[in-house]
Amino acid sequence: MSDASATVLDVASCSTGKRRQIRPKAERRQQLIDATIRCIAQHGLSAVTMQMVTREAGLSVGIANLHFQSKENLLRETLRYVAEEYHNGQIEIMEGAAITDLGDRLDALLDFQLGRGVTQRQKMSVWFAYYGEAGARPVYQKIVSTVDRLAAQKLEALFAAIIREGDYQDVDPRELATGYSALIDGLHLGLLVTPRELTKRRARSVARDFLRRAFPKHIY
Image 1 (spheres, rainbow, N blue to C red):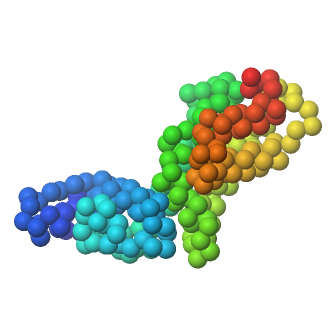
Image 2 (image 1 turned 90 degrees about the horizontal axis):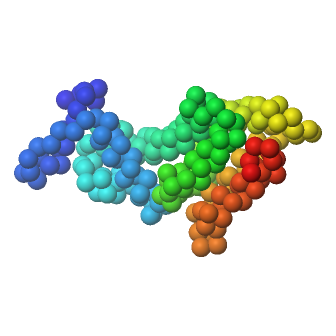
Image 3 (image 1 turned 45 degrees about the vertical axis):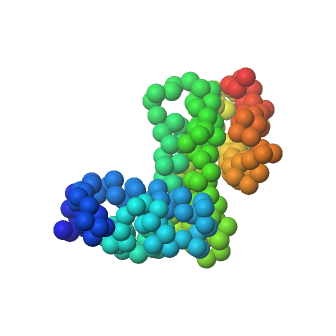
């Protein structure tokens, strides 16, 4: 059975004499990525092994090798999945047609950035594991830098549109977008490292206050 096939056979179940199970290729890949996220959160990036991930996923090493060929590829694709999920969610809000009011769009963006899906401790652990480990930073930069730049451009464009609509004076959209992005990153780190001191409610209040001061006609 080739790697390009639509489904894969779980060889681990065959070896134990259990009934053979066939799952879609995408489902097996996602199963391994989800297990990798849990392993990074629990053990740290450098400690993760292919055996650890497959045990967590309940799959065989052969299945993991079929999909990712190596641990390095699996780790890269896990980071890519987390990064693209976050940035695509932001861009959909900033560019989507579902929300036309700019103030509502800003509110929706804030809700997404500090919502349950993004601030799951396991997913945030992946971000900061790559960012904090020197050997992993080149991989982080290569995967994340492109989507970071795109998201920054879209945020700057959103802020510029709000500035024009509200006729705000002496406000630079690029500087404001840079400051806001840094604030969100810092709040994510605080939620991960000091969750007792920084609750999600307080984090949202801090970010909302930043936006209210910048755009008082749009954020009440």
